[in-house]
Length: 300
Ligand code: FAD
Image (cartoon, rainbow, N blue to C red; front, side):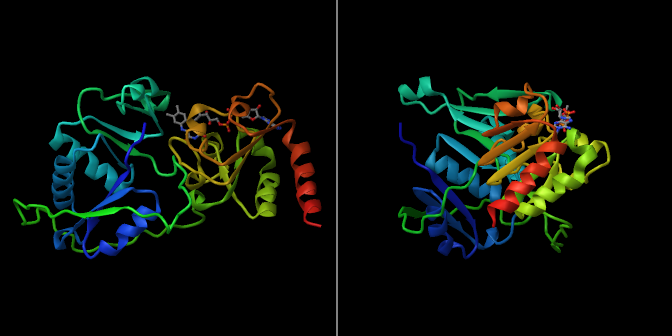
């Protein structure tokens, strides 16, 4: 079954960005270019997006579970009387329904305080809406040679008086490393708490960054800013080396999108091995020095 991927571009003086959206994978882009959309405004963005969805009637509408996405999507869903699954960590299409030409989304998100994952379907209302946690999907390679259709859409404003006026925008200062941008991450779990210097050394040797499980953060060995998982960051590096991490669902939710996962754990039944591409059963204090030696020798 083929689906058309349509991007919606909202803003002012943004028409030249439409080809970027196509290069990133859209078949078609709907451009809403209006002075009222210059900066983000819940009121005008929700008005414009609701009109776009009412006009084009997509089967599904997805947006990022970012600060703005979490603000915008529920307002639009309420206006459309559509179901919205917020903060999704996985999306699939029901293959049985797809045989009959129906694109029913199976959207998975943490539930019951994060102790379980639930899969939600919206069989009755359209569009099926979801906000997706950043980094859950890895980005395809950008292809500047792709071509697609660009459609301009002019919203009909019923009220142009802003209900909220933004007087100043103060950029957030991010201190330390942003692990969501790292290509190589070495994750320290509770099993690595007495050899964190070794785990850090692997990260440095590979030119990567250190991250940690929540256990390590809760135990006071690492800063919350480098926690990976459901209540931490979602990461998608090219390489993730999990050191002494058991593989609890809440941790896996934040790193299972990594391209290659290497797990080192002394317990052969540790759940992390179920998602690892390479599994090393052994004590970190023996495995890590051997690993560092190998990395150094491979460079000679
Ligand atoms: P453990 O589960 O204690 O595992 C330690 C592992 O180290 C074991 O598998 C052990 O075999 C191995 N080990 C021990 N010594 C060695 C050694 N010398 N050599 C090799 N291996 C060794 N967790 C997160 O990580 N991120 C989250 O965002 C997160 N959010 C949560 C949200 C909720 C609502 C809840 C309820 C829990 C959350 N958790 C989260 C906690 C999660 O359930 C686990 O408790 C946590 O991930 C366990 O961390 P760990 O794997 O480091 O520790």
